[in-house]
Image 1 (tube, rainbow, N blue to C red):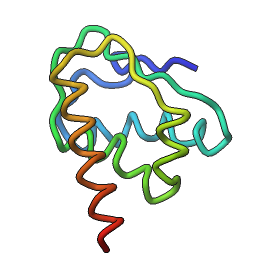
Image 2: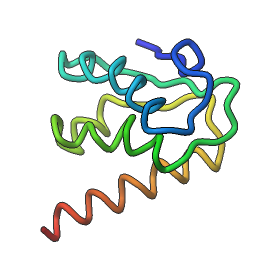
Image 3: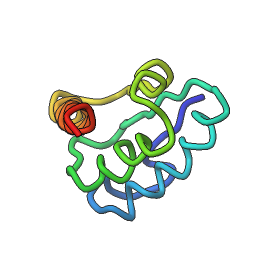
Image 4: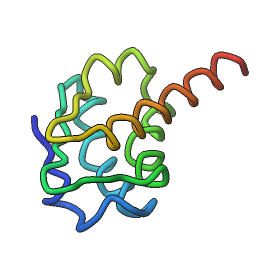
Length: 97
């Protein structure tokens, strides 16, 4: 299933924006579905958005499940880098804890 970010939020800036996206994708992932998040029309995201939209999923799913079933489309280097950095940091922190 494809979730178009622009169908749900006007920007990828705040925790509230991220929470809205998480509410769209979390039930699908928990149900075992594959989800593609499309950033069509967006050229950047903040760490706050990424934390709320994607990192919070780690409280319900392990990283392997997320990596296997969550994909991103219509993104750019900045978006990809921000998502990757936040996941890398969080996964490493949880391993060290």
